[in-house]
Length: 505
Ligand code: UN1
Image 1 (spheres, helix red, strand yellow):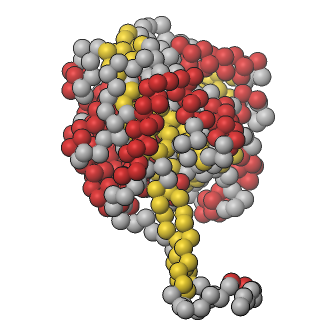
Image 2 (cartoon, rainbow, N blue to C red):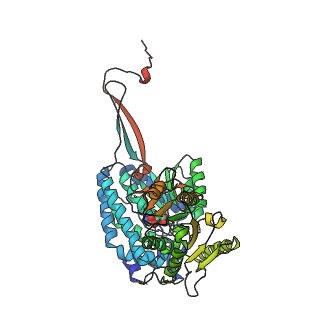
Image 3 (tube, rainbow, N blue to C red):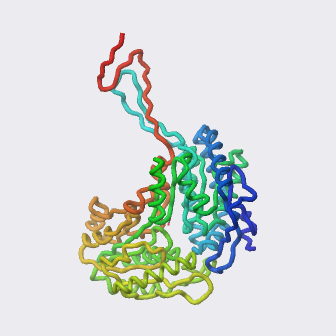
């Protein structure tokens, strides 16, 4: 067993169910986590069944009754300790993420840093859960709004960010006074269990277990129950558009709230006057980083006609120099994809691209070695090709050409998804057009920065089929609370609003 697994408190067989404490023998069957590099088991997990699910929800409900009455800055103090504990385990947790998910170590550690950053943000936020006060139209009346905790919430996360995306939700929800049930991806359960061990220690020391709970389990035993459960007022989910449509409609039926962070089809526009060195580095990181498995990964680039040939040639050269291999090796820039299915999806997309007349400029093949390795791929495409409208979770980059900035923006927006976008330019007109109401239609729009690697301080999420949710910084905390408008009459009269008269004897 690798040292980092032991350091994180993991063993050969681990409970994947936690409701105010670990459930020792959850009944939902065994799940084996497989390293995409070694194609060997990392460890086993006992999944939650329906009864375990019920225990977990009840624990979260019960803890909510007291947690909501803990002053927010005191909740913040506990989240501060959690941030400290994450700092201590940054290295082994980064290693586990790299080992279980396949992203390179630097990105694995970066992901833990993202969790630490949002913990720090949440600590400050715990003293800033501001409501507005407004002037009443009636004499000696005071009106204000306040924000109260929402309840036990559900957090559904994907394999590609097995720790950070949970943290965006969990740290903010915790200072807001919510308790939570986390359903992580079944492809990365050990990363979730390792984080749960960290939470368990901190919460135990503060005698508030049951704030953070965990349910690794099948969709039928846990996922479907969670989204149908009226006791859970908010479901925050990250995943595919298909999954989001299902969650959105089920939760809407019961008039619950959702926060959806779904697929992206992110593009970079490079104008003729752009700093090409900068653009090149950002595009390679955006398209090849995490083996193209970020929701923010760069999937399309639009190059001005006058620079397209030269820039594409440089890009191909850069792609061919990428070191692919063991994500734990510090020289590696690209690790494996998550599993066999991901490779099949990538190859099917490339076949479709070819059938539509696209040309593969470099890459396109599976690498002949153990593990789920592929070559990062560049495809010359034309606007309107159907495959380029889809999010394939793989390192495929489609290259397009344009003549005017308006045309590039139109093509960029002409897809169903609306998460992240970027323009590389030194031209003020182009930059401001891109950022104007007639510009990018995405939730994230950057100038001279790539599409991936957002900081936690901003609100993160996107429009259209990306689902409309906003997580992490800015005022995303409002998703995790309920707003209450309060009017207080300190006069001795009973005036009605809008001057309505309703006098009784
Ligand atoms: C995701 O891929 O679901 O902006 C999240 C980024 C990261 C988060 C990605 N900070 O690329």
